[in-house]
Length: 459
Image (cartoon, rainbow, N blue to C red; front, top):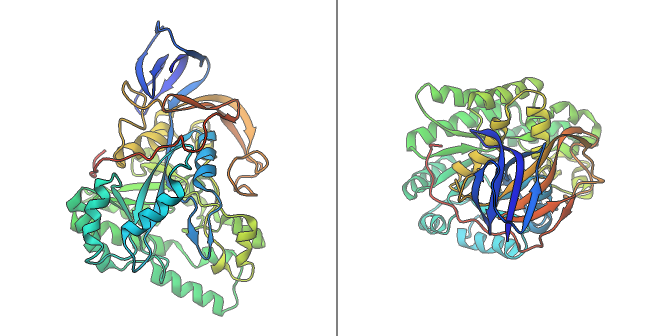
C-alpha cells in the first residue's frame, strides 16, 4: 500500500514547511514539494498541520491497583490514544515483591499480546532489587525493554529504599539502561496520611495536603544526587512543582543532565479542584495537582529545555471505583484519564495560546520520548525511513472535550466542557490510515510491541 499526502504544513522538532510525504508500506519513502508519485491513495492536507505520531511514555493499562484494575485495557487504551493523535504508548510493568521480573513481564504480556490497537512498549518497575533480580536486568534490556522504574513512595507496596536504588542504578548503567523514578518522599507522605486520618480528615483534599511540595522537592534532589553519584542516566516521571524543578536546576550547576517529564494535567489544572467535596476524587493522583505558580514554572521549564517530555500518567478508574474512597481519601484509586486529550490540549493551551512553539510541541510530545527511550528515528519524527506514524491536524477547528464523546473506557472526563482549538483529523500508524473522520479503521492486534535500543543521558 502506498499513500501520498499533499500540501501539508509538515512540522518536526526542527523544521516547519509546506510539502508532500510519500509512504510505501510502513515507512516514509520521500519528502518534498510537488512529489510526482503514483500512489494507491492520495490525501490532500492543504491547510492542515502534519506532525509525527505522538508518543506517551507514561500510561497504566489494565494495571492492578488497590484491589482493582485501571479501566482502560490495551485495546481500549491504545485505541483512545490513536483518536487523540498518540500512535505509541509505553506502559509500566510492576514487579511483585518476592517474585521475578520475568514473572511480571509474562503477566503483562498476557494482557497486551494481540490486544493493542496502537504500538506500545514497556518500562520495568523494580520493586524488589536483590541478587536474584540483578542478572535479570541484562536479559530484560536484551529484549528491548531498556528503562526501569523505581518508586520512592507507596510505602509497603511499591517503594524501594535508597540501598536498593543505588544497587539498581549501578546495574542498569552497566547494562545500558535508564532509571525512571516516581520521586516523592514515601515515609513523609505515609506519616502525613496517617496523621490526617487520625484527625478525622477524610475528604479528597487531604490527599493533596498529605503530599506537600517538599515531599517531591526532597525526593527529586535525592534522586538527582544518586544518579550523579552512580553516573546512571535518570528520568523523573510526572514532575509537578517548582521545588522539584529547582532540584534539577541545581544539578545543572555541576553540569549534570537529568531527563524530566511533566504531564498535561500539571500544566493546566490546579489543586483548587480538590475543594469540590468528593467530586475532587476525579483528580486524585500522585503526585497531586499543584498551584498556579507551579504551572508557570513548568511552562517555563519546557521553554528552557529543563522539562523534556509532556506525558499523561493515564490511569483511569470508573466513578464506582473512585467511590472506594468515599469515607477515606487514602482508598481512592490514584489516576485520571488523559491519553486521548494530551495532544489537543497541549496544542490548544501551549501553541495556540503562545506559550510554546509548534516545534517545541512536537519535541516534547513526539521526538524527545523517542530519543530518550531508544526509538529514534524509527519513531518520533518525519524523515525518510522512519515509520509512517503521522497526524493530520486542523489547527483552527474548535471542539469541546466530554465523556460523552471520548473513547477512553471511563465514565467521566477530567476536562469536561473544556473548549480546545485544534483537532486530530487523520492518524496514520505504520503507513496505514488508523483514524479518519472520527472512526478507527484498524483492529485490535494491529499494534506492535516496539523493541527499544540501549540509552544514554544525551539527546
